[in-house]
Image (cartoon, rainbow, N blue to C red; front, side, top):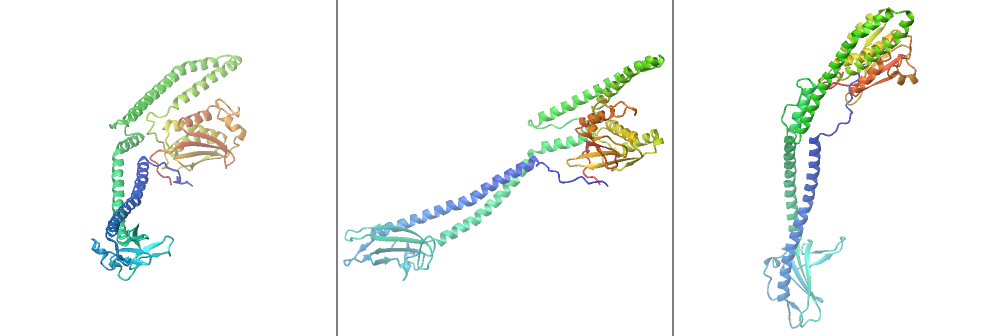
Length: 455
């Protein structure tokens, strides 16, 4: 059974998301601060403005307040603000001298009184409404005691004004919040368009549709594109040169080595035995270093893609013929939709060595299946029902030139070459005991970019 590629891998936030989250946080702080700071400033302004009106009333009362011959308080003229004379208008004043009290017409038959039921005492007016008050004590020439004057104005109109301002303010701030975020989103999207173009070009590079980045980019991104193009060109040049040199070396050594082998075959048994081992070592070294040269990978490093199921079927057909007398069954459980980011010939080299090893040691069954991991990596597992390898010898088996069984033909280079080739693709080869009782070789490789999900 195939396992689906898990979606639980942690994904890094995109640049656009980072910008938008940062902008949202900053604008939110500013909007909330403005939503609470501006009403506070407006309230302070209204309080100061109201207190200024009360000071004018206090000054007017202070200037006109008198006493009659009996010592009673008198205010011969009305205040210039008619609201102090209008009953229950919310504008009140009172003046008290001992038990004598003079009050504004607006209080009618009521008096200013203090309500101590709340934590903070509040002066209330004729309709029991909370007042904003201002007091002053004055002394008249013919009066021995101070005259206490209090002016109060109803707080309700001021609170109503503040609530209206807050409602309108939050509406404006809400519109401003979404407007700024919309503008920032458009600005970020426009600013990141060059990176989007680069992303599309990199996808085209992976698919093999182009060999370099062609678009013109802003000056902040242009050096990256130029360096990447230079790196791709340099990589392709080095790879082509290495493969040409390895091919030339192979052809240059093949004929002299064949001649030496033929000449050694004509020698006496003692001389033939003495020279065969050095020749085998020379052949082994040639095969090893040519194998390393082949590890250079694809000429288009970003667009490599291989169907492992198809390649294993093709290689297994050849091994079925070579090991026909062993009657070995290979079960290929790989999904035909799976593609890996490994060049075809490199994958044939790696999987060929692993399958050959499985065919050599299996008694009857080889199983090939996948174990999917996160972050776009997959384990290709080749498992047989042979005798396997002792756990303490598995790391040793990956070393160059090590043969754990001298009776079986081989150079001891296969597993080492597979391990180093897997490393060149940032993967790895893991050996462990399998569920069939034999060796389980897990080749960890990257899934090709076009594979979004596996069934």
